[in-house]
Amino acid sequence: MHIMISDDAPLFHDLLAPRLRQRGVEVSQARSITETKAQLEQGLAPDVILLDMDFSIAGEGSFAGLTAARSIRRGYPKIALLAMSKHDELRIALEMMNIGQQGGRIGYLLKDKLEGVTQLLDFARTVHAGGICIDAQLKGLAARGGKLTATQKRVVDLIARGYTNKAIAERLLISEGTVERHIAAIRRAYGLPSPEEERKLQMNIRVLIVRAYLNDIMGHNDHGPE
Image 1 (cartoon, rainbow, N blue to C red):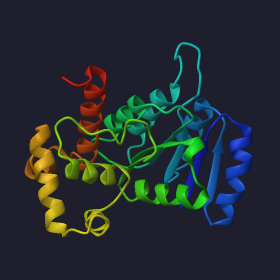
Image 2 (tube, rainbow, N blue to C red):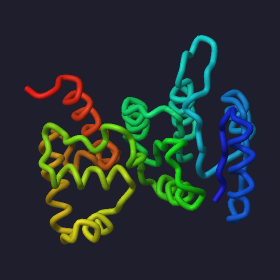
Image 3 (cartoon, helix red, strand yellow):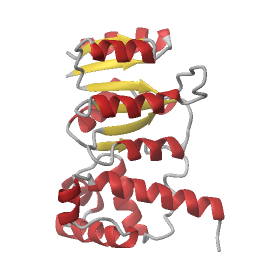
C-alpha cells in the first residue's frame, strides 16, 4: 500500500512515516496543500492520503483540508481519503460523507484518539477497499438518531466504523439476513434510494446511510427533545 501523509506538523511526519515504512508501507510526504496537489499533478498516485483537516490558508479559514479533500476527490476519484483532525466535529464527518457519497473510500479520524499504527493501517485498508470509517469516539456519534430504533442505530454505528454486514452480524450476534433487513428499514426511515436506484446513480449506500444519520443526530441535538 502507498500512503501519502499530507500534514503541516513536522512531528506528525517524524513519528508516523518511519513506523509505516517499518510495516512495509510505501510513504510519500507533503507539508502543505500546495505540495500535496503538486505531487499529484506530477503523477504521484498514492492509494490513500492521510489528509490534515486543520490546514489554515489565507482566505480559507479553518478546516481548509475540507476544500482540499473536495478538490482531490474531483481530480483523483480513485484515491482514498482519510481525513485527520484534532477537532472533534460532527460537521467535518458529515462533509467527508458528502464528498464520498458516490465513490466511498472516505474516512474521518481524530488524531488524539488514534490508538496506534496498527489501527491507522486498519482504517487505511478499509477506505482503500472502498469502505468508509468514522472515529467511534467522535462526540455525539453515540447519540440516538431521532428516526431510528436503538438496534438500527447500533447497525449504523458499526457501518460508520467500517464493518461489513458479516462483521456486523457477528458483533451483534444476529444473522446477515437480519442485518440486511435492518439496513432496508434504515433506508426507508431516511428515504434513501432503493438498491436499483443506488446502482443507477452510482451512489454508495453505506455513505448515504451514515450521511443521513449524521444529519439526523445533528438536527436532533440542535433542537433538543420535543
